[in-house]
Each structure stands twice: as C-alpha cells, then as structure tokens.
Length: 231
Image (cartoon, rainbow, N blue to C red; front, side, top):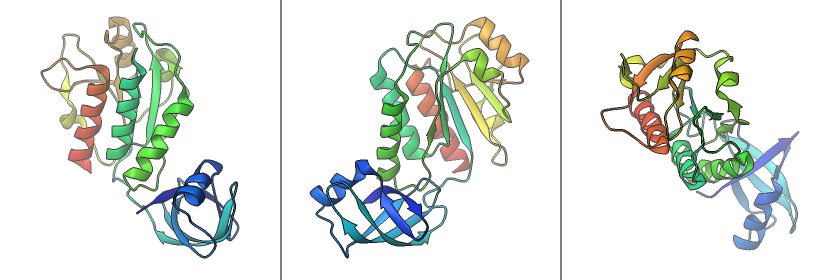
C-alpha cells in the first residue's frame, strides 16, 4: 500500500504540496486513479483524483478504515537530544514504526545539544508513519527545558536514570488505562538535582534493565517494552 498525506475540505481531499511530485511524477498518477491517503486523524481514506498537475492533486474521497494502524495505549517520550543528530533521528523513526503519540525534546543540565530542528524530525515522522501504515501522526513538540517540562501536568510520569536508589522496572508500572510519559536523559544522564526535581513532581524512577544504554537505545527499549506489553 502506497500512502500519501493530505487534508480534507468539505467533500474534497487535496494532497499536501510535498506529496504531489511523488504522486504525479514518480508514480504517474492521473485523473481517475485511486490513491490511499491519511490526514493524521487516525483514519485511512481512499481518494479518486479529479485534478492532477505538477503543483496540485485533489478529488473526491471516502473513509476506508477508522483507527488505522493505531496502538491501544498512549505514550509520550521526553528525550534529551543526542550530540549526534543521526542517533535521535534513528530513535524517532523506529519509535514511530512501533507506535508513539508524542515526542518531546528536553534540554537538560548535561545536554550536549541545545538546539534541534523539529521540522527535520517531523519529516522523519511522516515517512515512518506511511512506511508502517498508520493513520495517526506522532507529534514532535518544540524543545523544552527540563524545568519547563516538569512543570506540566502528567498522568503517569516515569524517569529512567542510572543513579543508585530504588527503581521499578518499566513493566511493573505500566497501565494500559493511563497515558504514560517516560523521560530519557542525555548521554551523561540526568543530574541528581533533576532526578530529585522529577521525583518531587510525582515521577516514578524506573530502570530499563541491567545494561548502561545510550540515550537513543534507552528510548527505543522504553518504546519497545510498552509496545510488547500493551500493544
């Protein structure tokens, strides 16, 4: 199945501008052809092209499937961007393939990277969403400082860190009926002050196994565990 991203206005659909060239020039779609598309609302649609040019594709449509490719849980990963952007981009791609609602870049005391290009990550999200046949688009939020993120409300907030102290396994604290947010720190881990601040805000400390993991690996282990336990 070849998926496109589009939007709906009234009784017509229109492909996003970035999708038109692939549809018309690469796949040679034209008037009368049918295509499958998503809008990011969780549904799968089928459209019939009534107009196709180098800059625009639109036509009529019908909804084919609700909750297309969705997972039965709500998951947010708040993760510190890695110094090497390739690593965080890999995390984003694979996390979307498994199933995740929101990715929040957080800037921590020990973060080596303070600035990221959210639009680049959103492009990776779209590609992974279409490849893994999903109707929902994972949201990539604008980067927040650790304190800004902690100040927000979270229903089931978990913090994975490497410091000593009591920590539950991720499996022990998962609840399919509650939206879960997991915090993953930078290469140097969260600072002790950040860990305490998170705990004071209601976060539960967790571990992701006995090995010390890179940031992007820890993120993927967290997403994979939720996917396997609740998916």
